[in-house]
Structures are given as structure tokens and as C-alpha cells.
Length: 261
Image (cartoon, rainbow, N blue to C red):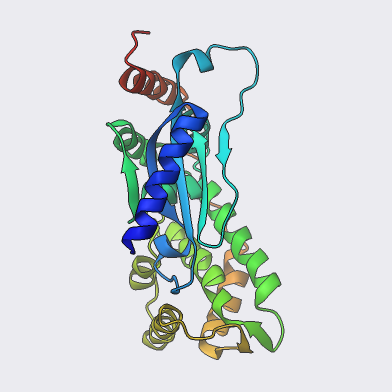
């Protein structure tokens, strides 16, 4: 990763802290660069979790819990308030779970993020995650992979959620962020794995992967798995308890804001 973009990301995070009067406790890469199938011109999808001063949370008014910045050619940056992040952890929100496992971390302040990760398995819901990934795969399939000529690079955006569903039904736990971990663990057929690996190499090399012919072995796999997975129904979340999340929120206020509560 270029030093110039790293500096730009850190600068933008600091500007957000100053302008919004927040403390960013965690920032990471999301999207294709975190998944491991970026091309040279892929943008940087920076996601973060922030916390405000304690007084902000002591109002009966509904407070905005998202910060977004305009997207430019290279940088897409946005974040969630810690209250939103913890609420989504309760719902086993897959994007949040992916953020917390990102291999590219830009900031990690204090102990709060590690404590959130510690609760991931407790609030993990195979049913919720399966629903999310299956509907993502179905939607992307309908949009990009129908017909004889398809968006070849969009194979990744169907393959990844399909493999995530297989990971979940196999009982492997929280789905990892990195695509190659999914492929290595889930794909058993040698020829299919070779075809996927070749597609990854082509995309990373910057090869043109726009409209083109289907790759039969990958298309056949996707078609059969989408049909099979559509009937899946997984068990509910492990717990509905908010107390541990409330306790962690109070810990975060104490650690970041230095106040007794």
C-alpha cells in the first residue's frame, strides 16, 4: 500500500475527529482490498467506529449515529457511532463482523475493539448471517451473472457470499473477511479452486474483466449452490441479552472520556 494513501487516510480520520468532535476507536479497510481481490485501481473503503463525549448520549432526542464523507476517486470513508455498532453486533450484522476481522487496520485505540471482538461469538447468529449472505448472492447474481455475456469481475460478488453461506452451514463460526481463507476452507473441488485462483490473479494483475463469456465451472457451481442454499434455515442467535453490550458501552465511555459513571 502506498505511503501517500496511508497518510491521506490518517489525515482524513483526524479531520473527522476534529470536525465532528469524536474519538475514532477503530478504523479498517472494507471491501475488495480487505477481501483480497482488489485490482490496482480499486478505491479504498475505510470504515470506522467512533465515540462522542458522554454528554452527547444523555439526551432524549434521537442522535445521528453515522458519519459519512463524500466519495472521491480513491477514498470512500464512513463510520458508525459505538451505540450503532453494538446494536448491530446484537443483530449479528455481517458487515460489522467483517470490519472487526479486517486484515488492514488503520487505527485501534485502547481495549474497546478487542472487547467487542470477544463478544462476537456470543452474539453470532448463523440464521441472520445466512440470510444476509444468501440474499446478497441472489441479488448480485440477478444483476450481473444472467445471460450468455456476463460481468466477469462480478463473479467475486456472488462467489464470496455463496462461500460464506457454505462456511456457516458447515459450522465454522463467524465468516472470515479474507476471500482466500473462504476458498481454501470451503472449496474442495480442485478444478473449481484452480479456476477461482486464476480469476483472482487476473483481477490483481489488472486484466480486463468486464463483459465476457461465462466460466462454466464457476457458473455451474454458483447455480447449483444457490438452488440448494435457498432452502436453508439456521438456528437463532445464541443470546438476546443486551446487558453485556450495555456494560461494554459504559466501559468505552470511561476508557475514552475518562469519566466516572
